[in-house]
Length: 299
Image (spheres, rainbow, N blue to C red):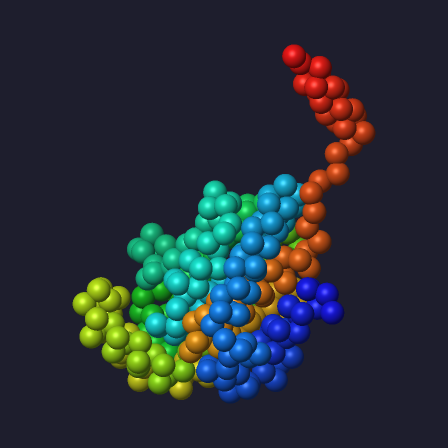
């Protein structure tokens, strides 16, 4: 079995491509897959990071595609650390990370996609969205007052919220298909942490002084909407997962396994893009040969 086939087999249980019947409960947040120990996970992650650096160089040299990685999760799932570890081996000049917080007043003067559109990665680069336009069908669905009172939408748009969110899901799916047709490969990750593990991590943030800064009281309040969020994520993934723009639902209770799955998935998707170094035309090859001859003749 080739390396690519092994990777494909490893990530297959977590890749969702729009079957419409996806059930979030089918992914166990505590699943550690076929791993037999921490050392194996560490070795595989390091190997994946090395291969990803190679793919990034080909992406930049070919200059036809961009890659956008989207990370969504409940609080304390490990988005920041996963991004840090998985992208640790790549050239930082070719990567841009954007963490989307509450929209500013200026951003609210535009449509919900505007602030994301303006920072899409250019060809040859990797872009990372830490949270994204998907918040518009997740947080806004749980807290509809954001739509009805803050986003300054016309009354006819907010009259039927079910239709509004259904339309947004269609808009997102259409937008992602548009991006793919124009050379932006979008890969989406939902880091699926369990409610019990989130509680454990929240307590660690409270009890460990060096982690106190990570804790926000609002995060605990959102736990009261856990089931609503899970239903929103499931519906969102069902309506926006395609083979060209897949979702990966990644078990997040074990951080090392989570990072390994993400690394393998990114590598798999980039390998599928058929990236390669550009083939130089004969004229340019001739100039290179002449330059080499000149340098070799130097004393």
